[in-house]
Structure formats: C-alpha cells, structure tokens
Image (cartoon, rainbow, N blue to C red; front, side, top):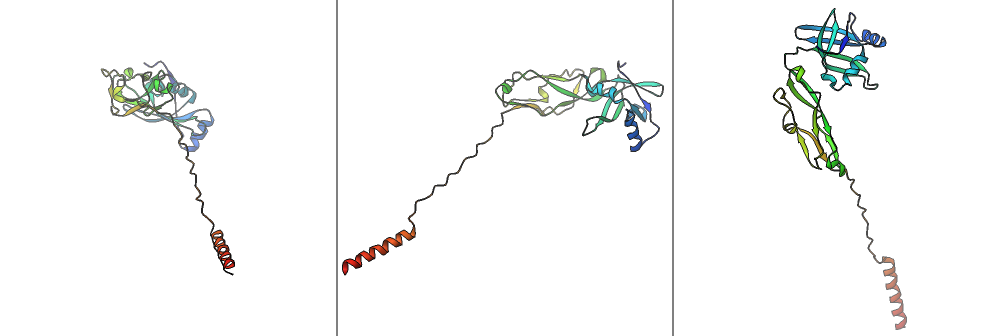
Length: 222
C-alpha cells in the first residue's frame, strides 16, 4: 500500500466555466481511470500533487487516492501546466495493480563531471527518460549514469546504461543516444576582405603628356 494519501472529491459540474470556478477555490479538475474503473471526474488539491511531482520518484510515485468512500493505488499518468505561470491545471490518475506489469518513463540522472566538460566541452542530454516495463514496486526512481570518464566526442546509448534487466524490460531502442559530450562552440572569425587598388595612370594625364610632347616638337621645328 502506498504511503502517500491524497483526497479526491467527485465532480458534478463539468466544462470550462466549472473548471475556472474550481481553480478559483484552490482546487484543480482531475480524472481517475484504469483496471475496470470507469473514468471518474474528481477535484484535488494541486499542492498535494506538486509535492509528489517534485519528489524523488516524481510522476512514477504510487500513492493512495481516496474517493467515493474508498481508495485506489494510483500514479499521475498525465498532467497539464499553465504555460505562463507553471501552475497545475489538470491531472490524470491511472489505477495501479501492484502485481501487474506497467510501462514507466524513468528519468536519467548524471553523476559527476566529465573530463570533456572540464576541458571546455558541453554535456548534451538527448534522451531524458528511458521507457521500461516492470511491476510497480520494481520501477527505479531514476537511471544513474556516471559521466566522469567521458571525453569530448564520447556518447552514451541506451544499451550502455546499467539497468537490472532481471526484473525490468527496457523498451527504448538500445541504439538511441542518451547523452554526448559536444565540443565547445567556437565562433568563426569573419575574414576581412581587403581590396587592393591597382595603380592606373589617369587618361587625362596621359593625354596631357602627349599634347605637351607635340607642342615641344612643333616649337623645335619652328
């Protein structure tokens, strides 16, 4: 049984206007479904969910949701945030059966500082979560990856991660790049193009020189 207990109240009024009134009261709309349970509209306290989402297990946290005089073990399957304020607007809860395998998205957590980063490189995390299938009690909080020995140009793929596959089936493509150490960004220097002016005698001076030469010749002949 989950240690965290969240209370949900069944919603009678639905729609945008009802949801606005609900949020004005300090609650948010939610739904719960799964394992023979018809989709049921609820309202919950967003502060309770915010604490769960910011916990070590995050959205993979299994907790007890109380509603209709009973309770079910659930997890946060999906949620919606206000794009401006970042506040929770809506949440979907999926009922969990502890002896049935489920699919989870488990975050990747890096440990240490790589040699490549110390040399000026940048750690680029390409894949932040690994998809895996397992029993709810076997899902790890995160997948740890020690990056201390990685140098510039090194990459880590899904198949390189240390995951206990005796209880967990990794569903993500093993060839997918999880992270890489990229070279530092170097701005290209703009080459200045210097125009070389050719020294060309002006036509007027050339013409003038010819005229003077002709005048001198005529003077000598006279």
